Length: 305
Image 1 (cartoon, rainbow, N blue to C red):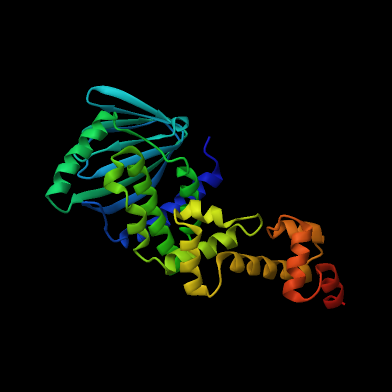
Image 2 (cartoon, rainbow, N blue to C red; image 1 turned 60 degrees about the vertical axis):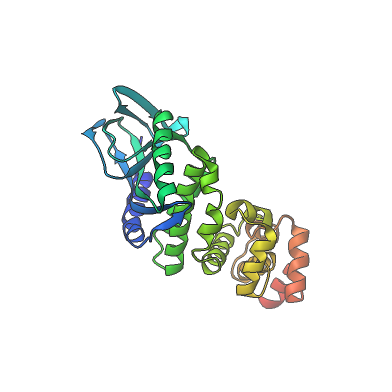
């Protein structure tokens, strides 16, 4: 059963992604240039059949709920949300869809053009691998988490958020390709991706993540996993922009949030320390005194009289 909240979320994401996709430039990876054409999440309240058709571009579809089957090459292949796989179709492939009621299907359409003679040969091999895999691909373990992250920003009209969505959307697509096909073709994709705007986008996304996760502990190693860069690399880029390390910025953000809650609410200090991401009351109290010159309880008593 599709909830009203799910429907509203996906419909808002569809509208917001139209402008983002239109402004997303092609990006090179290996011997290919990839251009994303459209991104859409379709909601099916009732069983629906899409007649046999073919497209001039690549198509990637994944289930967020329900079940879909596809008739290809005279055989029917079914995909359920619990399979943690997606359908991947090369250009000009004749196929038919049958989608069960209560399904949510996310689809991306993109072109992949070779940039040289080697790319032409690799693309032919790429298409043959898709067929060999029965047009199904494994999803990265963090696929749905990444999609949720992208969706959380698509309604924000700021240029920074739009850039972050573009970058993360590209990375999500490339993760899937890298997981299922020749890793040698895509071994440098992270470096190439961040080169789109290594400083402003990366720093901006780190700051937004800190703000979003301010109510729970986040460590430098978490950012290493998110961005596939070492802590040293991340801090070098971040410090060049902000004149402080990630941990220093994160601590200051938590303390400023804590100060605001301390003076503008009656929240117990133990609860306040938890809600601003400190692992213990002692850690919070020591950090607060170092920053503001008093322990939290003393500061509240002094400044709220």
